[in-house]
Image (cartoon, rainbow, N blue to C red):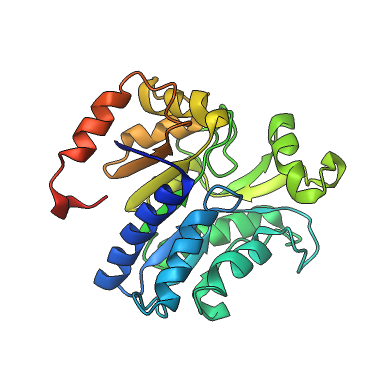
Amino acid sequence: MEVVIVPDAKAGGELIAEAVAQLLRRKPDALLGVATGSTPLPVYEALTAKVRAGELDASAARIAQLDEYVGLPAGHPESYRATVLREVVEPLGLGPGSFMGPDGSAEDVQAACAAYDAALASAGGVDLQLLGIGTDGHIGFNEPCSSLASRTRIKTLTEQTIKDNARFFDGDVGQVPRHVITQGIGTILEARHLVLLATGEGKADAVAATVEGPVAAVVPASALQRHPHATVVVDEAAASKLKLADYFRHTYTNKPEWQGL
């Protein structure tokens, strides 16, 4: 696992966007796994800026959703499908055919989970999966004590995650769905490159447990330690609890430039 400490969220977004751009230059039809929430927005903004400036042609890229609320009506502005279309697909100038995600409004949710897991494999697998991290160490909606071998499935959100996500529902926890479809940790680990972005002091404990703690289901993100190509990008605030912060700064500063992320 490589840990990269950046000055702020904007720098983190630009660094990851450049890694995505390099991937798309090598493989124009790469399948990009995207996360939602406020943390990855600097990445999408930096990617959009590259496209609009003519520095990057993303027209052949494919986008895969990480998770989805269960039970929101089709077209609900806070569904993750709508969010990804609004924040990623449309700004990058992609067509709706470039996008794939689980069906959170399906009558048979379990079948929808299995279908999406199979669809990711049929598409050739995710080339780069962007991840955020919850204050309790969850990735996707794999809450603490999720199986590290889990596949795409339905999950019940913890009260903490419901509180954290209420900001997207006018601060009303009663509007936040209680269930989600999420790629499982086992599914996530099949992506060729995992990039986790964390910003803010509120994520510092989760980042420290993920990077420097043991691999344990109680901290789902710690499973990234078992991946052959995992990158954790954190701002100074999110890195504030890392005991090896100076080492991480040294190794990144002195790595060969050709390695990239």
